[in-house]
Image (cartoon, rainbow, N blue to C red; front, side, top):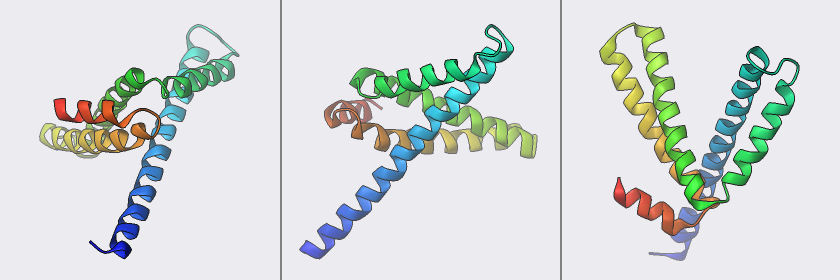
Length: 133
């Protein structure tokens, strides 16, 4: 393989990993907003900002622990699948369409999260996780 092709592949991999990292951070931000709104409506009125901020800080810290990063990868992938199910149910109102969209979004969420998380954790643990799937 030529050096030019290797450099081009390296740049492409870097851009892909950057997108995946942004996607993981967007998922964490969405989780913080949902948690803050839930806290405001249920058990801590006028404290939604603090709850969301603490969830954001804790999730960012958990990204640097390899085991919890992999757990977050699985949870966020399941959340992508559930979101796909809800979108399919809302748009089409059909069980088959909901299942197909849920599988596609769950698989793409898993792929993006696996690419995004190894930047924070060790690649060895991510590779073991992929091998077990």
